[in-house]
Length: 182
Image 1 (cartoon, rainbow, N blue to C red):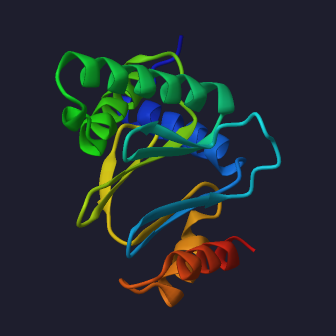
Image 2 (tube, rainbow, N blue to C red):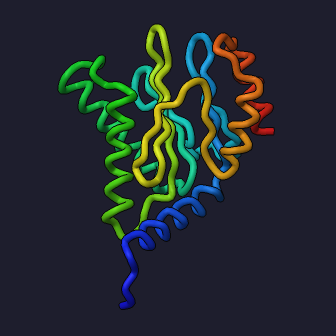
């Protein structure tokens, strides 16, 4: 077996994951005065690209369906277990985002193949929305206002940035997200 430097191996894994993610349909998240909207084109009634994980906590994903479906179900189980064992208020978007980041990071560095997924986790609190973007390698970013994931994320983010304001109504946020995806 030929020698491959660790840097080259990580680059190859990242390229592999990005190519798989780019094939999926994008998801956009836009915060508004009372919450957050996850919007995507989803022709399948059985595909759970967007889902509620727990009270006030939502999940969205792009990439390989079987991989993000496993992560979605694991997140639901983790949230249910934590809410039952401790208290419902102990289940947070941050704790779920960190759990997803740990799982993706471990698979990226140690597994045979990295996950071909990109995730969003949002938690709606009384006074603000927490929005987390988790990449295939376990990198996690705290986002503000809006975010796009998937193959055309850069173009979508630019379109969202042109029309976003902190005080959007739900209808205006939906219109902005829909127009960005069009």
